[in-house]
Length: 285
Image 1 (cartoon, rainbow, N blue to C red):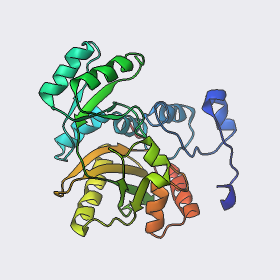
Image 2 (image 1 turned 135 degrees about the horizontal axis):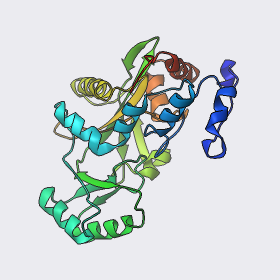
Image 3 (image 1 turned 180 degrees about the vertical axis):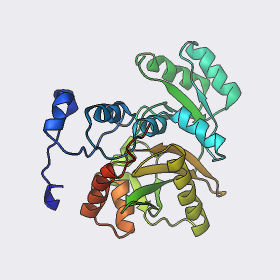
């Protein structure tokens, strides 16, 4: 933003009294991830102190972050999402593992109900391994976990970006990885993945991905930008995994790659993101 002639200040809210922010900044360009950043909490804080901010409001941020809630809405809208089960911490690890076995069978994908970056995620092939993971999860009582049907295929993502007040779906990005799934290492080490943007998948599939991503964005009431992730199987199934209301803004990230494929230079991408802070309705839930 400094390159675009803007006065910028990098703020770490852990070390900042939020009530001092109105005297320091005119608009908040959010580059946050995880709990407290994507889940509506910082958005609610900025609403309270009256600072315009980029991205979605409180409700859409919370729904997008909490995967079980997002998946329930997707199912109600007729969108294809892998079958899932929320793990009940009141049950013993053995009882939960048995419930997974009887409900979904093996393998399953284990992950936090609110999380990102594939952190603490794993493919689980047996009750024994599931019990091990659940026992370890009890050391983090603040976190909730879920499992879902393990869908094999090609990870794909679709970015949505508001440009001059109009929501646009960006070209589809698909990924090939060498691991069992698109894990944290592959997401941060280019040597562990091969990306195609625009996607090399058939046009009818990429069209469906973009249409479904737009439906998901509108379903949760997202604003300005989002990124919707899918798994595309060899049979052509396009299973929707989750929605990210604050996709990463790194110059090497997926959103920047999709914007570049659409002919949008990185400085222009950031300008579009900044502009959306001022196009929200006066009230968003």
